[in-house]
Amino acid sequence: MEIRVSEDAQKWFHDEMGLGTGDFVRFTVRYGGSGLQPGFSLGLSVEKPENPAVKAESGGITYFVESDDEWYFDGHDLVVGYDAALDEPKYGYEKEKA
Image (cartoon, rainbow, N blue to C red; front, side, top):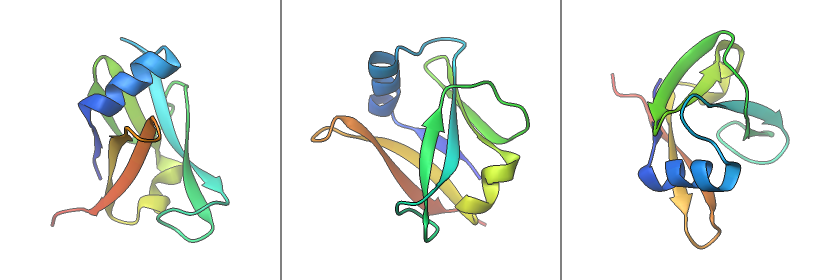
């Protein structure tokens, strides 16, 4: 599994959330909503990793998924983009390459 964060999304995290070098963003599973798994959706929080399954750095910010949330991705990479019309991140999932 990989996390890929676009430059526009990284800029949004910096500008809208005030994040910068040395900060952390956790992508976490939430009950409810819609997403990759029925009845669950993706959320985020600003916290340090404890037992990350995967992490990626962009613009000095470390993005990660904890091991206990890895099941949600079911063999998919997380692709974080930016939706200019909504002015917010958008999440995509791409099947991992074998």
